[in-house]
Length: 149
Image (cartoon, rainbow, N blue to C red; front, side):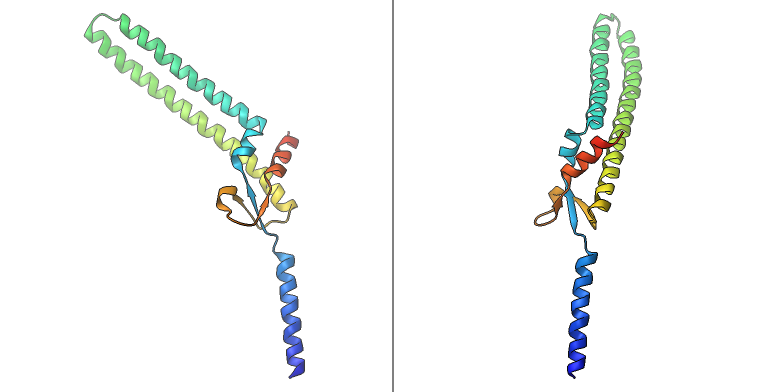
């Protein structure tokens, strides 16, 4: 009986030790802070903003042209053509925004994966999802991104 109790105690101790050795913990990241400190993300945002301003200027120019038209038929034709052009430009802007957002996300995710492996973490969550505990890896990810070509 004593041997069984000793064996059970030994097994529990080994299991407890193994669980601690295997479990790396959870990291969390402030994605917005990473974006704000990542030059590639900032240039992507500026590029999208520049295209958005171009679209706004396009509409200002078209409004001036519209006011110069003198007949209802010319105005209707102009509105139709402008609406088609605007929709095409707006769709291109949305595609650019999605493309740049995906590029930024993929680069940040790649850096976060490197940190996950290096820090032997089990998972990385958004900092808003963590109530208590975890390891803040935001600065480590920023350092990784700055070191990337």
